[in-house]
Length: 348
Image (cartoon, rainbow, N blue to C red):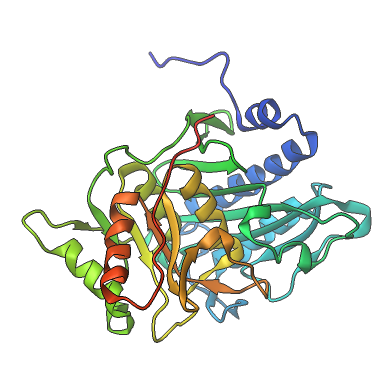
């Protein structure tokens, strides 16, 4: 007989206990509600004829899938009507969404409603990514409230839609926690406490799209060659859905690489709703979130300041053991200052 928890810590309960901020509870509840709706749409995609293209292009020039459009509408409707948001930025909308004055609150949210949606038609894991800021003092809510570095981000998270639906998130300078959607009660329940990278570095896994390797700089090529060489080479794992690849990297160890290259000198991933939220989670789980060589120097993703809401960035994320391999190649290459790596998970 299955055991039942008569005192389960739900997402709302955890947020209230951790923050004592009623508006933040409302915000996280709105995000959770939209993710439950997206869960339903993803699980019923074939039955409801939601596979295929919607015939539109999103803010970054990608073809929109039907589920992209539906997931975006679900998140916008939930957040606008929560009463606690001032401005929203979505990958699917070229312009920021200004919340009507009568429903306006203090939070600014950037999100990718359905990351990895190119995989949806073949039933591969997809996800949602979000970052949360507070509007600046005196602001009524504008894009400038979000055009700040990750140092100003107060909350970041992602949701993985797979065999289970998991939300992973953290508040600024707080531990990373995981919540699993219990379909029997319709609530996200606390299941992973203080998520951290394996202390010994974990499994030796590298994750990247090697189809782009012809465009990489020498340090990245040499690092990946090192991962693949030796008596015990690394295992290659690449889903093509950032949420799935990052989730595995945190739990198992390894490194995820999507660098700047000659084809995409600014990288491919969007800073506000992919780079910064994932960097915040990775670092607070004890990992490294670097840009690699970008704009002439190596820096933390969290320190980048977007100039436009859909700015892109390169990403090298993973455990210190594995990111060090990349940094060592930059040292061999010379001509660039390579910072020393330090990492420590936040556990309380």
